[in-house]
Length: 356
Image (cartoon, rainbow, N blue to C red; front, side, top):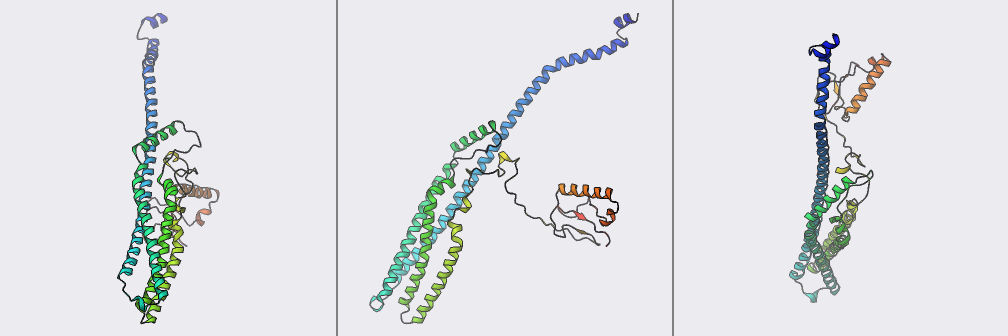
């Protein structure tokens, strides 16, 4: 009877026990295809998300390259414009003094006149040549500066970046633009720019010598005045040589341009290798000051110490608990140091100093 009841009676215990098993198996059979399709869609979404992130990284790299190209062009343009304007000013000043400076040639020393004419010609020639070279280079870089950030260059660079993301292997470096303004400047404009700067620099001593000779022509009746002018020009020339020797290698040298996008060096924290530590980390000390508090309490910020990190805080807490467990007498020697949970300063670890 018990078996019959179990088989025919729907309210028997065996019947109740078999219902969840049947419903569970049917639910799994129905949910199986839906789960598989959802997982396939999730994998596809994940692949699309990774592809979009690689595209964002490529756009970020391209934006950095465009900004660097713009700054390089502006920097070189300002340098060329400044030297060109100064050279034009010097040449115009000498030409005006040469044309407007009236004197009687019969009453002057022939050697002084020869020196005055020679220095005038040298200053005008050097200044005019420097101005011409700087002007032409300036117009050239403004014209070709945009050719490195065209849509064709961007499309090619984005394609290389996406191909790099698909075929990445450990140790590979992100792609960089093949054509850069710095490379063109170094190969085509650097030598010409240095030559123009040297010509302008050479014109300054000749200008001072020209003014000194002009003083002997203008103040022929007063030799002391001419000698005073010559001495002042000599002091100005000495200062020019000292200043020129100090700053010339920074202006004309390429030490600031040694690092380019095409160099293969260790990772520097580019968007594609953000997970790697940069080659050099600049640590700027931060010494925030805590507001003054009453009593004998002080803070590490008031002592001028660095702001502690979370790792240092955890290490200090573990070390404090370890010493307290090993040596109970250390608690008294620590001076009742407590970590305050209320911030008393921005990025400062307050410390309560116990009684002395």
